[in-house]
Amino acid sequence: MKYEWRKRDKEIYLPKNKPILVDIPPMKYFMLKGKGNPNSEAFKEAVQTLYALSYAIRMMPKKGFTREGYFEYTVFPLEGIWDLDEIGRQLDKLDKDRLIYKLMIRQPEFVSNELFIMAKNVAEKKVSEKLLNQVTFEEIKEGLCVQCMHIGSYDDEPRTFAMMDEFSIEKGVHRIDKRHREIYISDARKTSLGKLKTVLRFKVSN
Image 1: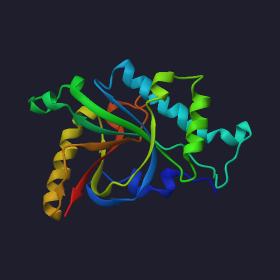
Image 2: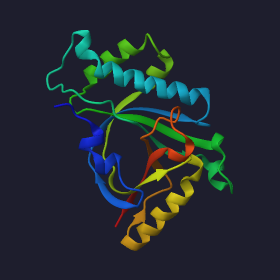
Image 3: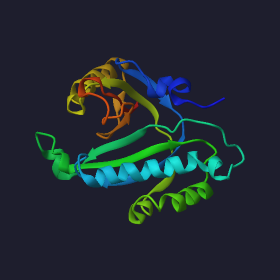
Image 4: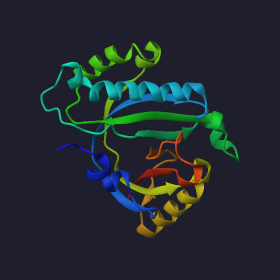
């Protein structure tokens, strides 16, 4: 049976628009670090690179290679961990040029370093070799987090974060740091601002 994250991982990817506590297990990712405005061409190229690698893995059986343990699945959504540089943290308003990010796309359990290298060889025909060489393959365990579905423009996220902060206080947990994760459920190229769905998440401790 095809693994579809929208059906199998609803708690992780399709929470309601009310904050919840969730324990996120270890997962494998293709990851790429960057900095600057997410509306820039550099950001767009980084996203394209991660998708090129992810679809290279997904399409391998159709290219004649099927790794042991392979199963049919839907490519996972783009995610990003966001922070600000030292100057950006001191400003009263958000300066998007001061953003620091780590973009990622989750990979199925069967993906290995060997498949990662094979995917890079396939993707090098479509994207920048320089960016490909910067991509890493890592396993991350987030653990205990507060998360919530944000509906609307990315610029309106502070109102959802305010709800999440209040929820954290009520539950007696503490946000670990200023970084947060976003999971892009909607395609911003095809969805109106008012209907965009983005999972917001930050790590907490008791």
